[in-house]
Length: 505
Image (cartoon, rainbow, N blue to C red; front, side, top):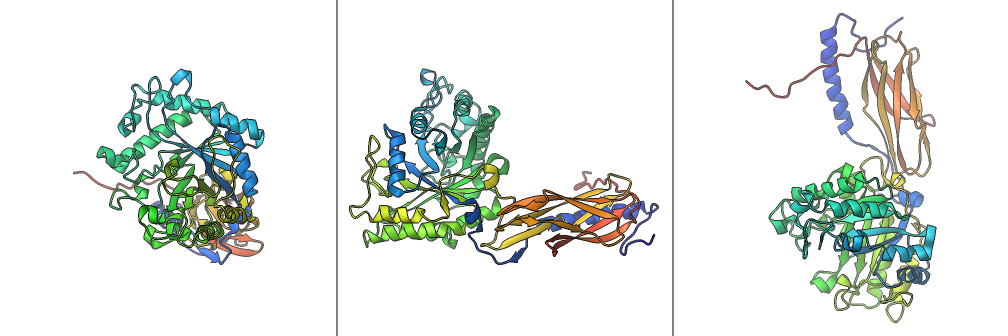
């Protein structure tokens, strides 16, 4: 049988095969690093159309918390899918409890099985015995947490959440890139690595108890203060295996911080702040949540705040990894003399909220904004929300194959593997394999198609025992159209090769 065109070593050319194997390995790695290639223009809001963006808010805790949330839902005419509030570590074992269940119980009593996802902004402050080995009046040193001095509290906190019926997102030690944050490592003359070690330790302890209803969020501020080497938000990233969600917070404080009026895009999508949402999507294959967002009123009251709200909720769907936005429905620091981000009023007991301002302009703008079909009252599962790869585009559809060079040894398992990744499709993409006639190569995909809006399929390429050695061009197709081609090198034998990177004399 004639051999396929291209390089075709025989059994006696082991040295050439070794050299080719090394070269092809490097080529394959380079192809894998090359990244995705945009294939066609597409609507930037495809992910929002398919997965939706969950309606969320920070609702200040009240005596009748379930009633407060229910009243908020009724006023804005859309149910919250995510509710966020703040807790510290001060309950660390007091009266035998490691988690204050007052608010979740109020939510359960009101909503039952339809309870929203609860986002706990979990602040490492005021740890106490017996949860920690000693009492802390305020911030807990990062090194103490990493050393395990509060492991009893952390473990029992995780067990308490595990025993509950709700789904939780733990937004742990947020805004670490602000010097004013108590757990900023700069307050301890430490670097970002100290924060990373602390975060990883807490994550590992929580995950060790098997709390399947608990997901972890890494949540920096949209800008770093001070803006200096070593304090970039990405310096604090714990690693993909330690992050379920990426959170982000950013507000238009305007005159309250003597800053200029900033729109949503000024905060999240300008070079001034490194196009933060797109930058994070281009670095980390993680779903994003705008964990805290809001604005004060502007000089054209009450129209500027209303316009800001409307424009924000129009802009959010253009960021494909964003799966929820939480409006901060409170004053900054819950202080009525500080910046007012509210879209409804708040009450100490619950169930008495109403429109703001007196004209209702802010509430009406918010109600109309979340009425968009892009916004839902249900947060997708973490599996569905998580993209298969990073995304560095601005809405283009992406379909890529990697690696594009593979090798098969006829004396081995006679298989090679590649992956097809699709991003931002509004319908399923069926996959097909095409080999040159007479090549005796076959291919199968698992799964057989990529579902919208994104996904990944594993391609297994199989060579029959009698396949001629040589180089083959195979193709990955969808509905008869070639997506990409893969170069398959078939050898008699593949050899493992040790390549020393350094030699010590």
